[in-house]
Amino acid sequence: MADETTTVERRGDGYVLLEEGRELVQLVGRPVDDGVVALVSTGTDPDRQGEGLAGRLVGAAMDDLRQRGLRVRPDCPYVAAWLERHPDQQDLVAG
Image 1: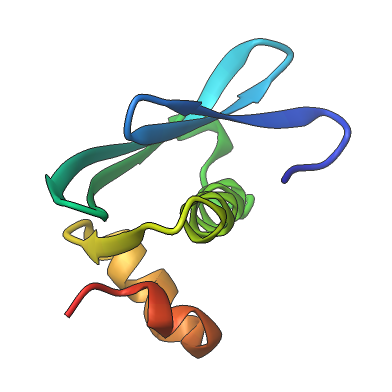
Image 2 (image 1 turned 135 degrees about the horizontal axis):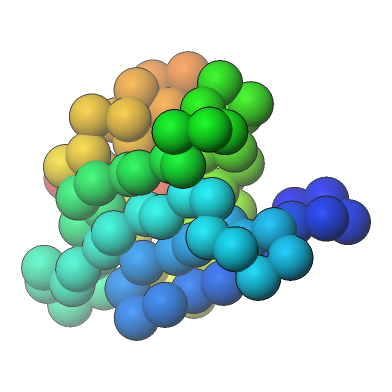
């Protein structure tokens, strides 16, 4: 899910990327329908922006959602853009 210095945790319907226990990126999610999670916002520690951390978190979230048999509604502009760049993940997008 992440490299040796970072971990990804699911928190409720969202996710966080941590480094040595410190939150670097947060992805907020909420359930909207049976089997669908809306990903509504992404926030990255300003000191760590531009390092690809948000992309790693979104990728890990997509892996987790797939494994759990859930689909996503990409309400967050960052998540929507990430999905555009990863057409292999389009099957996760709820109609």
